[in-house]
Image 1: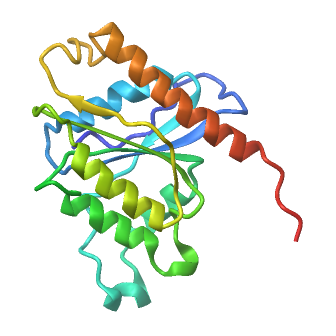
Image 2 (image 1 turned 120 degrees about the horizontal axis):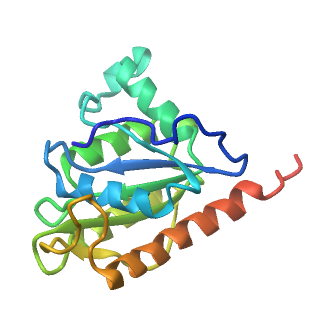
Length: 204
């Protein structure tokens, strides 16, 4: 799993209009290729967002019995997601579906229903695998889950096959067409999130 740290630029004033982007990697693997993809995606827009990798591998398995006194890891997770303007989920596919560690995090964030942190959040979904279909089936399951929970999942598909030339030695996209494709996908996420964050609140 990637190191969980804020990615703000040290020593520089932050523009007032930077979007807060929560990045969730659906893997607990130490050398996750999806964590590498997530960092490369952040690199495409890092001058325009306040991006934070959100840790999920420290969350206990969801259990309604814990709702009376939620563990601190759960409290931290839901606070960080709730504070974000947009969500980027970068996930592997396990047995043609969503990895257990990611589904567990989603379950914690969805309860109780009145505090569902996914509701109204603009979200983008992508992922990579060595296979040709690049997590396509898992992404479709995730799109359905987040949609049911009220997230505004952007259109389009970003199924990435992890080939040797996908990332260079610095962790950046080595293929220009892939960089352009994913750059446009990230632009779509930021544009929609920006429009929603700037919309005036509805009068009561």
